[in-house]
Length: 181
Image 1 (cartoon, one colour):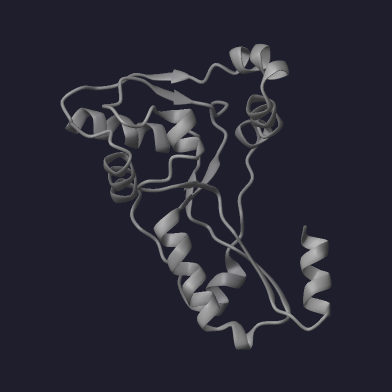
Image 2 (tube, rainbow, N blue to C red):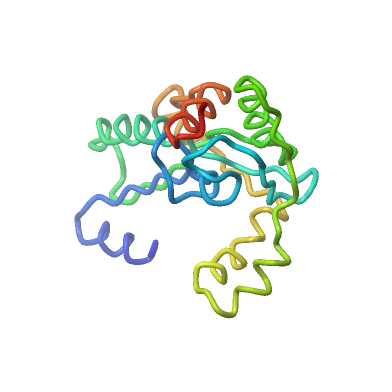
């Protein structure tokens, strides 16, 4: 895809790529957060952690991603025909910060949902029969080794990256997914 964008840019168009970690946010039901960590639409009873212990993971809060994209587009005249930018978003250094924040939300709601390991073994068994599960297995490496995006170029361009504090982002996401009381 990047090669096609480069061809488009070479033909005189502007191609801007803004990368972020795994998306999460209010109403974002098709995400690792909503489909892997919790079950939306009801109070959280169990929190699944797909990360290998001690392995960092990057998250992109959708309202911050949207604000970043608007700011980048406002400056598009300054950009090269092909520009590739990365967002830092929320870096979960040990693979437990996100699930711990979800657990804190459940405690505030009156119950402490347990954090359990994601059932990769079950996904492996079912993957031959389901395309989505096969694709999940293809992306498993992102939970087994750290991949951190460097936002240096974005900061040079914007001065600062839009950044909602993690607690607020998680609380807004869980409430937006119908996981509050």
